[in-house]
Image (cartoon, rainbow over all chains, first blue to last red):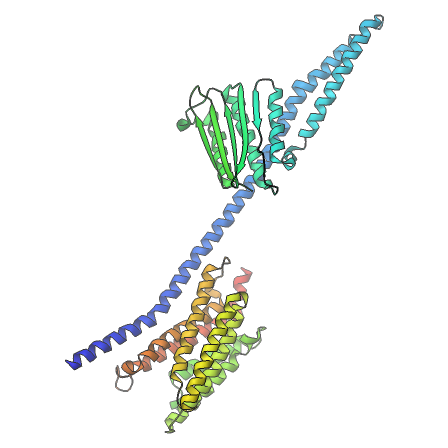
Length: 264
Length: 220
């Protein structure tokens, strides 16, 4: 009996010693697996950073392109027309009829002044992506004022009452580009007459919402050719800066795009 | 003479040779002096064997003196490894304090000639804690290091294997000593040999990493 107990103790001791000897091997194996995972995580983080930087550069380029398009359209439709009218008015002056000539000269001066004013506004826009450097609220206001000038939309813009003093230029650029994308979608597809845009900030979250009273669409069946690429871009870009985009719409009832982003 | 060349002595001598080749021009002082520590270890081991083979009643005093060198040297090594973290210094000071206290207690209790078993077991546990803290930091640290080429990692790993096993052997020494696998040797003989091979194998590889592989992995 005593021998059996002794045998049992001996076996227990040998087993315990074996565990002690094997345990470090498991610790080292665990560290090794963990380290490999850490490496993968670091690589993924670097890839995400690279994707983020690429997206920022792309957004910057798109903002510049959009600006150039706006400038081109404005030169053609607005300033070009004003200057043509000025030229026509000046050409039609008859020096014999002093009263009529004075009237036409005054009209020409008025047209020239309007052209100068338009040029000055264009000058602001020529700053392109630097527009965002003025601050997100100011940049959106500028975009809204260009939309309003087309005369096709009634726009109500409610800027955020208070934004953090330290802004995030990268996020500002992406948000501004999202606003441009949403406006482009409205202009191309929505046939809207009223647009409401609001910027809110609370609890370290910036919320941008854009509503229109256009034709709307079925969000589940995004027609790629019409809205799809733009909406996908909006979602992707919101995601890249850690936020999310919610797009609500139904046929005949307009649409609402809400973007929530941790800020700054 | 051949009787002196036990497996442990051969492992220690090989490690010493690798240390001389790899670390003699090392810029960091503690790595540079590693061969000196290994030389002290070899001399102590040989003296211990000599005293035992010539029937001297006590050889514990040799290992008691070696223990001080061993703990001091490994502590300094960990000071160099943990210099990046503020908590590391506190852990080392606590470990050193505890060891000094127990060593003094055992010294006063039975003098220098009897082996300080309690101090050695405590030292093993302290060094295992250091190693585990190193791993904990390795996992928490944001920076990635290629552990396969990391001299520090393999040096710590060698220590972990050795002192973890040592703790078990010290705790169950009497029971394990009674288990005979072959005619001459008990189980402890084989375990100590395996532990020594693991320790000096890991340390030798760590010196090779220090001399060649670490730099090569940095270049990549």
